[in-house]
Structure formats: structure tokens, C-alpha cells
Image (cartoon, rainbow, N blue to C red; front, side, top):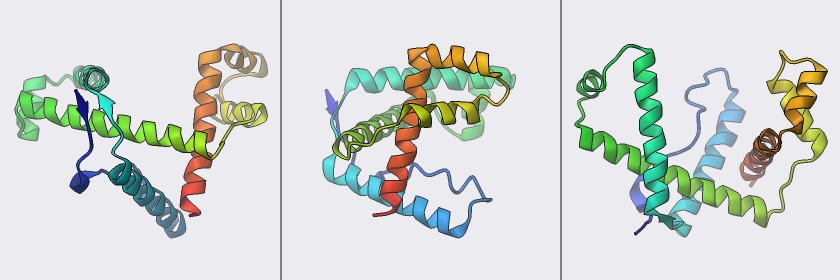
Length: 168
């Protein structure tokens, strides 16, 4: 099965509402980037396989349960406080997973289409900012790990893409 996003309910991916310290100009640029992504979602409607959506929703379900356990809350208590049934919660997780995957597909396509890359220097700089507690030797060890390097490369590329979108 393939799901596509409905037109009326694309969620903005911005966290600018959560970060009150952002300047109005930054918030405006972020809102513009969010609107561009929403428009792309509505126009392109990327197709995502049901199995990918289920896997992603399952991971989120596991993350939620872990977080609840860390706060010594039961799932039943959480659902009651949220005024949701288990089925409604599962549906929300599936919907969120679908949207996130569709956004990922669009972002990846934009990175490729615009030939946005991250240089080794940019990757190292991003890692250095993120791993402030590591010394040079420890940072070099992290950099040797392809998985870590790829993660930071994607972060740099996504930042460049966000800037490109906000400049449109």
C-alpha cells in the first residue's frame, strides 16, 4: 500500500515556536521555508510504502514508551491525560510517520536537485560544535566513523537547504 499526504493537513516542521529567542527575521525565514516545504508536500505528494510508515511509527511508539517509563508514567495514564485511545494514538503516530517520511523524501530530492553538499571542513566544524567536550583525539576518532560523518554531513546539507529555501 502507498499513502499520500492529504492537502489540508500538512504540518509545519518548524520548531521556531518553541524557540522564543529567535529573532523575528529568523522566524520569518523559517516560516517561509516551512511554507515552501508544505507547498512541495501538497504538490508532489511523495509516495511512501506502508511498511516504511509502520516501521517509523513503531520506532516512535517505542521512543514514547521509553520516555514515559523514564518519567514513571504508564501508557494508560498518558493516554487518559491526552484523552486518546490506543487506536487514536497509533493513528497519530502513523500519520506523523507518514508526514516525516514524505518530508525526508522531498528534502533528499531537493539536496540532490540543487547539488547541495557538505565539505569535509564543514563536517568537521559541525562535529566540533556538537562535541564540545571531546578533545582533538576523541573528535578524530568520531570522525573516522562513517555513520557519524554521514550524520553530520546530512546536518550541514540540511542547514544549507533551509537557508536556500528561506532565501527563495
